[in-house]
Image 1 (cartoon, rainbow, N blue to C red):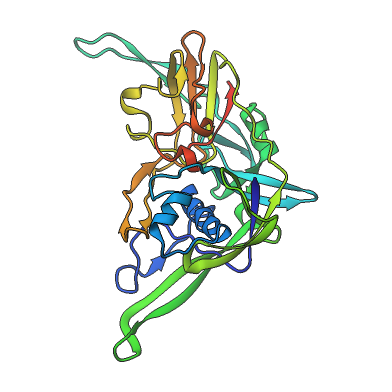
Image 2: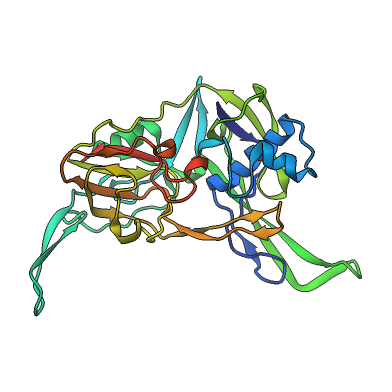
Length: 352
C-alpha cells in the first residue's frame, strides 16, 4: 500500500545531535525525515491496528520484530510529496551534480572525462575521470527540489526548473526555557530553540509499505517528536521507475534516499559485486556532506549505533566491463549495506 501522510499541525523531526536545555540551545529538524524515523511510526501504528498491548514485549516482537529485525516489513520512502489534482506527486532533492544555467534552471554536469596525471618517480602514468570539467564554476542555490517528471528529464540530460523549498514547507522556530522541577521555577542559562516543520497546503510524505495487512483506507497516527499527529490515506501507487534488466555500457545512479556503505562513500575496497552481476567500475561521483543517522531503541532503552550515510541527491557514474545487471536478490532494488528493508538506498538509473 502507498500511504500519503498529511500534518494535523506542525511536525518535528530532530537531527541526531544531543539536545536538552543545558547541552545545546537549538534543535534543528530534518525534512523529509529519514526512513528509520518513518518505519518507527509505521510499525508502532501497526501494533495499534493489530490491537497489541505496548507492554507485551514478546507479542510486539512477534508482530513487528525488534530494533534491528523488521520481519516482513518492506518500505520505500518517505518522499516529500504534494497533491496535484487527482495525483500525489513526489519531489526529490536537487542532484549533487547539478549545474545552474539561469535562475532556478539546472542541467547535469558535463560527463566524466579522463584527466592525465603526471607520473611520479617509480610509478606509471595514471588517469582520473573528472566530472564537469567543461562547466564554469557557479554557486548552486540550496533548498531546491525537482518533481518526479523533472527529475527523470534531468537524468536524461535535459535542463529543468527547480522548486524552492518555501513552496513546499516552512521552518518555524519556537522558544522555551528549562524548568527546575524541585522548585517549579525557570532555570538560568536554559533557554532553548526548537525548529518545527510546517508543510504547505496539500504537502506531506509519501511512503510505500509492504508486509502489513488490516490497515483502514484512512486514519490518524503519531509521528516524529512530541508525538505529533498525521492523517494518513491510501493512494494510487506511484510509478517508481524499474531498474533496467541489463545495464547500458555507461550508467548513473541517483540516490533518492540516503545510503550507507561500510567503506564510507562506497563499499569496502570499492567492491560493487554485492549489488551487480558482472563487473562495473565507479568512474565519478557527486556527493554532498555525509549525514550521521542513529536512533533510539525504546524497547531496550538505549541508543542504536550511529552510521554515516551518503545523502539523498548523490549521483554515481559507472562503466560496465562487459554485460552487467543488478542482482535479482536485492531487497527493494536498494543499493546500500544497511537499511534496505526500510527504504534506505532507493535508486533511479539512467544511461549517460
